[in-house]
Image (cartoon, rainbow, N blue to C red; front, top):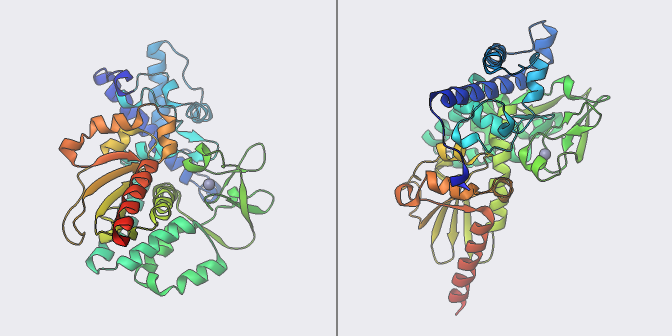
Length: 382
Ligand SMILES: [Zn+2]
């Protein structure tokens, strides 16, 4: 419950919040370092992570605690739930049960924290790549190209040579093809096990090798849903293979899956259309019922309700969006199940009276849509 969360206790915890964000930022950078960096003999550890280690060492001595022994120890430490962090945390993170990393890599919580710390790699992806895609598609009214680009990230986080050739011949993607080429990077050879790369059976993303053998998927949805060890397609490591950049995988692929799953659930009798990312991403979905009623929905797949609320603003209205009756922020059920009082916390930070949107679970959105859809299809047949 929101009221159970201890209040932030002043400048010390604000400073710790900064330290947690810096740690997250360093861990995301660490995950980006591939075999090529290591071959060139550079330190595998980003300087920001070294600064975090120095600060933690100092603060541990001051607090009379044992500091992390080295970088490996620090990374091991970050695999524990954040609530076990041995220093005061800012209010919104005190009860956080998620770790910053798992053996498969950074979690979406880590990514959200790194984004709010101004991580340069994430900003590159967000501003230069996704930002450019949005700008160009809005300026040139390329809704179909934008939708195709987003669906590509959701459906095909891995491309082999045959699929890549097919993507290059996809006419609708032509105006953004230069960006598509930058969305994907060659798969680092470090991710192979005995000459094989593996894709996750449930999300199709590339899996990371486990130290004990086999593979594991980094996506929260697969980890929390218990499907993160199920292997789908295997690819020979001696053939060319490309994968979505790590940041795009967490930022576009994971949330995109939740958005398209909701789209599928909403395509029901009584619903005449579900528009995806209308107005080039002004909202995630627009549902149009048979009587002309519209709902605007944003799907938000965040580990932490406070970090989710930080990024929520009033929904846009007016052209090119049609008038809509309800504005809804929809949260996947597996997020709500993990943290007690999740929806209540978001509602308290972003009250409907002030912000104009409702905060519901994805399941409730589908249930309420089914009720309205059945009512309007009954009355149209009466
Ligand atoms: Zn997966």
